[in-house]
Amino acid sequence: MSLQASDPLFTRSSNPADLLPLSRGSSSGSSPVRQFPNSGQAPPELLQIIRQKQITSLYQPIVDLCTGNILGYEALSRGPADSPFQMPQPLFAAATKHNQLLALEQVCREIAVTNFHPPTPDYMLFLNMNADVIHDPHFKAGFTREILGRQNISPASVVFEITERTAIDDFESFCRSLQHYRQQGYQIAIDDAGAGYSSLQAISEIKPDYIKLDKSIVASVHQSPLKQSILESMVKLARIINSKIIAEGVELEEELSYLVRNGIHYAQGYLLARPQFPLSSIPQEVKDLIVANIICKSPVSEPLPNMALGETIGHIAHEAPALSPTLPVKDAETMFTAHQVNGLVVTNARHEPVGLLMKDKLYYQLGTKYGVSLYHHRPVELVMDKSPLVVNADLPLEAVSQMAMNRDEYNLYDLIVVVRNGRYYGAVSVMTLLNTITNLQIRRAHNSNPLTGLPGNLVIEDRLKNLLISQQPFAVFYIDLDNFKAYNDKYGFERGDQVLLLTSQVLSQCIAHTGQGTTFLGHIGGDDFVIITAPGNVQTMGDAIIQRFDKEILSMYQEEDLDRGYITVKNRRDEVEQFPLISISLAVASTQVRSFDNFLAVGEVLAELKKLAKKRSGSCLVIDRRGKCTS
Image (cartoon, rainbow, N blue to C red; front, side, top):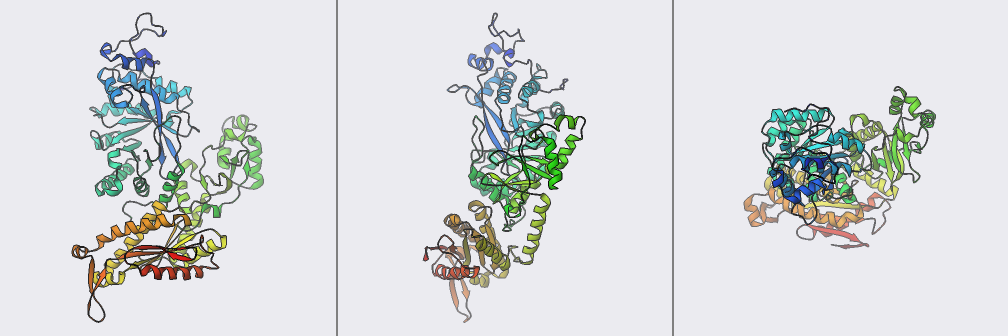
């Protein structure tokens, strides 16, 4: 079956209440309508819910894991509170049983669209659609377009989610019907992928714009090699069909971190925000976690994430001219000429960025038919980009680069707006950003450890010098492995190199979970590493490193050595000697405790702390507190 009208929403009437049988003389004022088969057998409470539109829409955000920003919201329908039909499963099951599914879906859709009031029109609205409605013989077009029009929502901002828990019997007919949706600008998502019927067939036949992974796959994915393999396969499949992955049911920080680092496009779940009305935002600590993992993002096959270069976007920001949103477009055009710039940042009275005006896009609009007469004397807020990329000045260059290059192609080369404490601080062009990153990477490559690829001594010294000059607070971890030489003697240098790689991975993973975006990891050489981070991260990060290392290092030993709890190695006198398993010692110096005249003074304090740490058995954390070494 194919749709004949231009707007492909299944409906019998523009008023969902008309879909129910009305008694003669009803006060609703509606015209008589077609009776539903078996509608009289439906529970009266169900009919009342549909007739009186007793549906509440809650909205759960879907977050872009390339930027930490909200992509859009999924509308989730609820029946009346304290009713057997409050939750969607019994509500829709009853509607399906009594041939009221289409009527109920229309009510839910109308409520969802009518109550959707995003702060800007750029947010997507995800609406659920049961595949069974396509078999209903009573529908006509027009309802969705009408309610979207009343709310000034473009069809391009709407994604229909096809629940994958329902079997689709006739893919050819179903795909033809979906094509009508797509021709009008709507997008399509497959919901519950991995938990329903014929997942791979549905994805390959429909070729959805979004694939929503079921929460059963996402739950504890960081601990399940099998789920990780499924996830990797889904990412590859999505790339082939030009689709995007949305991970549902994210509840743990570890799950979110794994998803970000391994190329998942979007996420949804209680960790990010619960469904609610009005629209909710994302907690700052969750956005910080996403940004921290963006710098460690890599394909699943890469063993070691790329670590921070040590520069923030604020260091390279320049003060692009700012203007008021009420300034006439003709005056903005004069500013472009006077300042010889390609972009102008639009700020409000509090000096907060509210938009961006790019020269090429302005001239494109003015060059259209009637463009000058329409806009030249009107305020710039009518032609500005109301959702530019706005980043905090303290974000590392790598994180900003990920965000910038994941923008739509139309906005790819727009200025990046930089803020500090919420106020406009400056702007950065994409060219400046990429050139800076390239130069820093070249310098780091010349002084990187050949095994781990981490920056070496010169870069570490530069990092400390810059922090001391800028008088920014910092803490330095000096990290050393205990009994590493004995391990090399027993297992060989190749296995020893694997231990060093494992250590670098453990450190980078703990930085992603507990550090900030500017946390720096370096490799001095051998089994010595350095972490430079914020003072407030010390205890949490140190504990995390020890816990993860002590667990991961066990995989590097033979079972018989693990059973004994030590290894036996011949010393230089050809005597057999026992050595404990490798442990990790952490020594930490911080500007919270003492000031440093130069980076050499930092090294001297760390050397003292390291001696104390090495005297203790097993993994340990020694922190310099108020000039005294404590652990």
